[in-house]
Image (cartoon, rainbow, N blue to C red; front, top):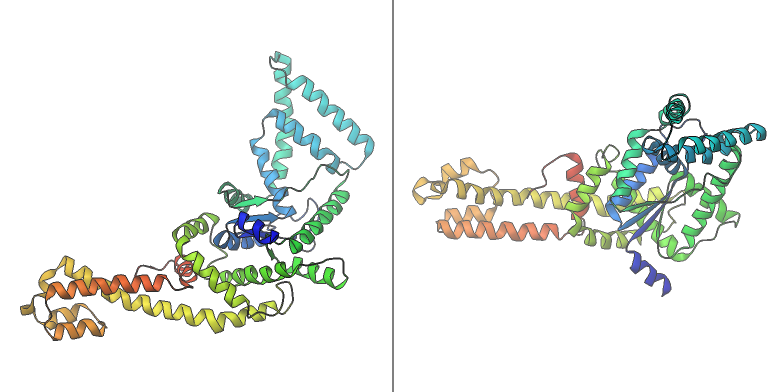
Amino acid sequence: MEENRLSNQRGLHITIEASPPLGYRMGQGMKDLLGNDLRLIKAGLLYAEKVELCSFQSSLMLERLSLTEFDLKGQLEYLKKLAPVMEKDKQRLELALRNLENYERELLSKHPTREQLKKRSQFQREIWEPFKAQTVNMTDETKVKEIRQAIESGLLELHPFDISREKSADDLSSAAVKEFLESIQETIVDGSTYPLFDDFTSALVRAGLKEKTFYVSEISTERGKHVSLVSHLFERLPVFEQATVGEILDIRRELKKSLVRFRSAIIRFSDDIKTASWDENFAPEAEKVFYRYIEPAILEIEEAVQTNKYLKELCRKFAERPQLFDPGAGLGVLLSQLTNLPDIIAIALGLGVGVGTLAYKAYDDWVKKKQETEQNQLFFYYGVKQRLSGKSHSH
């Protein structure tokens, strides 16, 4: 009962646990670290009310990109914070910290002398700018800005890793791993969030459960299947990987009304999956769900939309050129304008039904068909697919 109460308070909340790629080392290979994070973030943004990202690489890169926004005080504080990570030698570390404290006393004066202004300029030119250039160059700036946009939307929160508590890069790596594993354990027993893991994190969970170093709740297992199925389905969509966070947020706003029905369908489909989302057999089972339920339903929606376009076209043509529907104009003129006319319209024309009645009937049928199509539980998925592929979704 308490778990359900918390869940209702948070809405549909997803926690993403994203591990760094294999072979990652502090200060090395910083490019292309965020593709995996962004893939999971975009799936979460499309589906959830709120998303939390636990990713050491994203936390570190976001902090690095913020270097360009620091004032002088922020620059000095950041260097003091990072010094223990960058310098392993104790004596050199103590010297660096003393120098930074001296800079603080001399450079942060409210009424600086000419000599202090000169030292500020020297600090910027010889210390901060070279450090910033080297650090930002190691950061995938485009992807970091995408993640920042998601955070600024209010939908994404970032788990804050503490990078200041250790004295070396090796110790920092160990601390980050420990904190990441603790976060995973908390997520898989928390009944108020939906766990979404990448492949390597899933492997960690499998190993932890086998060795009994991890424990998982039944509700987290069910919720993991739910959101992992959604992520699997989104990744099948055209150019999902290339879609920007801005595009994803726009699609979410446009299709918000259809999302509730889509979630209901996903709960039903995920009940067919017998393995946990972190199991190796999850992907084949998710694939089976796609071919059994999703693909046929999307095909039905596409056919319904295509049929309804003819009704819409009929209404448009009547509004633009009502003379086409004059009984004296003949059916040949009309039928040359419209192909594959719905049977009800063709019959009405053959029986000589009044133009006003025909137009009203066409419009009424189009509206009803449009409403029926949009009430399909998978219309949200269809709509996302159409927008990502760049095709018209109007019907």
